[in-house]
Length: 178
Image 1 (cartoon, one colour):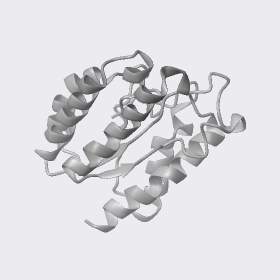
Image 2 (cartoon, rainbow, N blue to C red):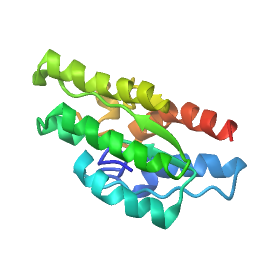
Image 3 (tube, helix red, strand yellow):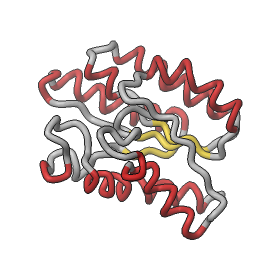
């Protein structure tokens, strides 16, 4: 469940980290299926409204939640973003699923206080709900221009491979605990 960072923005879906994750996991576990419910431009409010039905339809074992970046880029109140993410986490936990929360950062031009508070909300939710967490899914990607499109926000095909490398250890940790 995510936004353009998980919807393979400007790329064929096969080159996005979500499809690459599924391909990698299926090498050892051919029965694993990943449903990518990501939509470019999605906010936490949109995710909040869509997630309950998706959970009922699919009853997943694991939910990977990657939302919040568009909220911050639009200057939405952080309390509302956190509330929406908390709702989604609680809703997913009703299905006894494991949750992996993917954190992101926003450009520094939003101000230090807002940027730090945004980054911290992911950590706070991780602690509050005792869920798995990747603090910054674009670690070692976002500042490398060779891995990003010119917009400076979205990873290119090579960047998608690096994003997968940031996320894969947490996914494997969850699968190993099952």
